[in-house]
Length: 216
Ligand code: AP5
Ligand code: MG
Ligand code: ZN
Image (cartoon, rainbow, N blue to C red; front, top):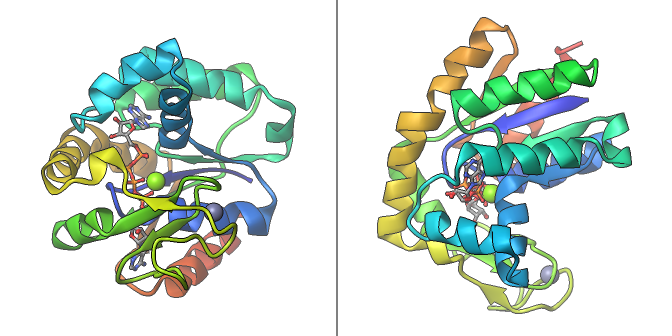
């Protein structure tokens, strides 16, 4: 299965991606996670990306396209992949089409998680992430058993730098201007599956599985 997860910041892409990747046994490729890992490791790419990420802006297309192109060529992507947070501009979508074309392959579907703007800010601002394993929690909607600690590995939970309210608002604005047009791009290709992200995490996942079932 070769899939894209589309949706605004805080829609639940990462939360659902972990489940989808497990169920279909495909690698979960999040450009946001890859960029944050580079920032943590202090790489040149990380230094460049940080300037954009901290402001809620998109990292330049050529940087993220290169990351994804390299990643898709790795062995584990032969069985499929789930892209989370890429593409994010029409330019990136066109670049992805070219990369897949050159690999003689194509997409099965694009899952678009829809959530109202008013819900998004609360989801992002309340998010907490394990600094060891990356598991995602929410202070209200998806609490860890012990406050501040990860259920999976007991690691410390932290708040993402770009999850402050004003940065989240900026990210939503950027999404509406630059990423939202992709729904039309993929709808025209008859790949788009709209999913109601405004329900319980388990129900969102059930809807995604149902939508993918009718894919093929
Ligand atoms: P990225 O890391 O991709 O962030 P994002 O798209 O803004 O999305 P988020 O990770 O914030 O949200 P999510 O949809 O994954 O939600 P989650 O599941 O965590 O990108 C960050 C930055 O990197 C960008 O701003 C940009 O600078 C750069 N970047 C990345 N990719 C790029 C690209 N392709 N091009 C250019 N720049 C790029 O859920 C959110 C919270 O809600 C969690 O706490 C969760 O527990 C909770 N939650 C989830 N589902 C539900 C539910 N159904 N009900 C209640 N709570 C829920
Ligand atoms: Mg995410
Ligand atoms: Zn953990």
